[in-house]
Amino acid sequence: MDKPIYITPEGLDALRKELDHLWKKERPEVVAVVHWAAGNGDRSENGDYIYGKKRLREIDRRVRYLIKRIEDAVVVRADEQPDHTHIFFGATVTYVNARDEEKTIRIVGEDEADSLNGCISWVSPVARALMKSGVGDVVTVRTPSGEDELEVLKVSYAV
Image (cartoon, rainbow, N blue to C red; front, side, top):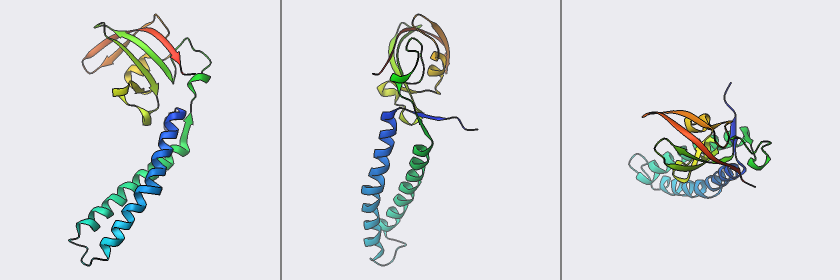
């Protein structure tokens, strides 16, 4: 069985906005270009037509993916977590690693992970290592460069 598709309300909203943009704005614009290019004659050497058809396939593939993800999504509201002293999905966690580097991350769904903005997937090694721990706990995480110890400094949930 596949793992559940956990997502925050904000993440689900972002998927819906992307789907809406692709379906109502971008796809109709590409269809119009393809229709115009098809009327120009020889399609085998028509760049607008060839690129447009390729882009339509990409859009349709992404639309199908988004529809499936939205249908199967399990929305988890961080502020409704029963235990705010331990780390679960939706938690914002501040920790310090063995190199004394302090980091703050938020544990989110796979579709909304963005490490540059401090959002990591709940299935990532760091998130899995931190799950169920609390302030003061030290956990070990395996990284490509070896094992690292993380000490949890703060756990909070969006309200």
